[in-house]
Length: 359
Ligand SMILES: [Zn+2]
Image (cartoon, protein in one colour):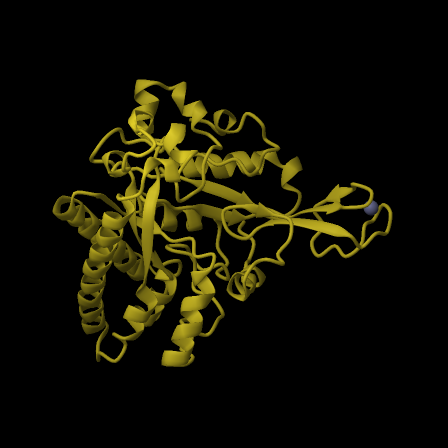
């Protein structure tokens, strides 16, 4: 699959892609319809009760585990091996608790009536057309997934071993072991509770700052772990770590197969992306080569709100064309390109400040 097929319109840099091998084999044309249609965490995969598609269903609810806190609480153990052992036991207990909580929440969710969701349950959700307005939704919503999320794999690995997975092969092995374990638990829970549990690479728009604030208070400042105002997005290599696009992609790619409740890969690129389609195509081809499920390219774009002048000059304060200081800066905080950072919390803004470009 070449980048040219992914992006018929190269100016649409916010386009995202998601696919499954079977779709390509069965109906290659269908693949095109799956481009640029959904958010990173609605790209659900697991389904024991119908077609394995992202269309007509989604995550019903998800709960995120603070794996950094679990790792910090294991730091008092005398050796790395012991730390990991204790951490895995704690993680097991927490997964059990979360699965039970999601099941109980589902038991409540399923009692809702179709008419409470006039749009979703009229035509969007798979099977919803068979429901009458006063029918309960339980006959159709089990098609959805229940997400067990995690945040700050990088910080958890630093707490356990001293290094994150972008800088150490050993840490990467451990990272895959941790998330692989969560995937195994999710499969077990699916059998036990008869739902579609899946692991979710939590994007953490809000939690990125909140968990860190709580942990700072509880555990104090731990270098590399709680010394910033945010935890790293899910399984990502930390934003401050300078490395090539390829390295970042190779480290993060294997997690995509494990996090079937949703994930995202992104790279920060320099300069004016709208005049650099070759770079975009290379990144997309790399994502395809490494079997990543969802990806995006982050770039800056300034637009003068008075005269409409556009460019990609970093930190531009005033318009080179008319001198106006009314500049709208397009950038990506999470999965979305946004023009203003005013509404984002302090954790995500601190993360944005730390981001380095990938080469
Ligand atoms: Zn202007």
